[in-house]
Length: 214
Image 1 (tube, rainbow, N blue to C red):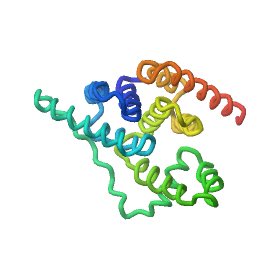
Image 2: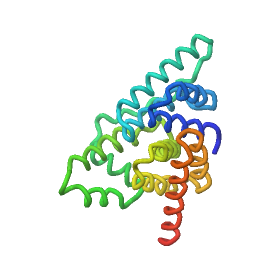
Image 3: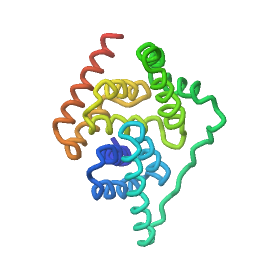
Image 4: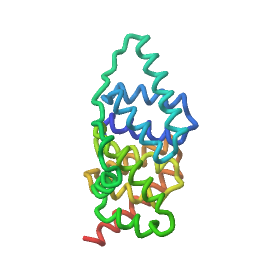
């Protein structure tokens, strides 16, 4: 993985974990120094609201604000980057279904079959917020969104089924086995060896299943 992708992975993990604010600021600096725009870093942090909740995303945004202020005081001018296309007029449910289907063509049906009778609200919130409001935003690449998600879920260590889905989804949109291994190895430093080992084991399961399905 290139340095930009690695820093995106670390910013995602540290934001999701929420317990290492000084280190998060170091890696926000790292992300900006390795080619991420301000808006790309914002997107990574905003996306964590889906996986680790709004408090972690709010704290991450505050860390980004502090870093940008410090960099401006030192005369560093960072590229703002592209603004996401306005999607406020779209059918959010339909858009969410389309975004999730890009990652796995069968996942919308799986989601509905699992929860429509028991908690239709969960299906609605997942599709409308997680995928229409967040994943449809087009100022962070699909690849970097999956790197951020895989990194965060590995670091959190509490959502193996979702990690498995996003590893598979990442491979569906072009991430390689080697790149995903690199995420896991990188996280030995930030969330520890147990989370990285669990992540590698989950990757192995996904690879074996994909081979069986061919």
